[in-house]
Image 1 (cartoon, rainbow, N blue to C red):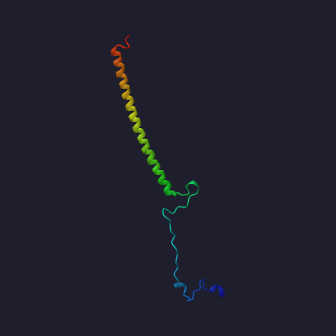
Image 2 (image 1 turned 90 degrees about the vertical axis):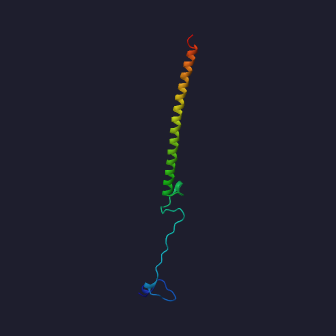
Image 3 (image 1 turned 120 degrees about the horizontal axis):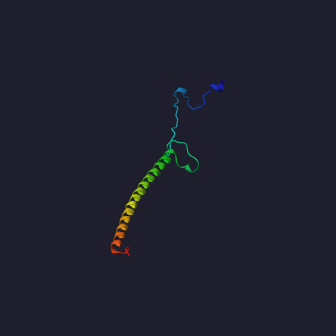
Length: 102
C-alpha cells in the first residue's frame, strides 16, 4: 500500500499535487504544413492543398491554351476565306484575258 500512495515524481521540496503545474507542449508545424497526413509514393512531398493548387493552375493554363487555339482557328478560317476570294479573282482575271476561252 505504501508504494501506491507515494508520489510519482519526487522532488527535493515536496509540493502538494494540486499545486503542481500541468504543462503540455504544443504541436508545432513546419513551414508549409497544413496538418494533413503525409502522402506516400510520388506525391510524398505534396499535401492535399498543394495538389489542389497544382491542379487548378494546370486547368487555368489549359483553358488559356484552348482560348489561344480557338483564336488561331478563327484566324486560319479568315485567311482561308481570303485565299478563296483571291483564287476567285484570279480565275475571273484569267477568263477575261481569254486564257480558258481557246
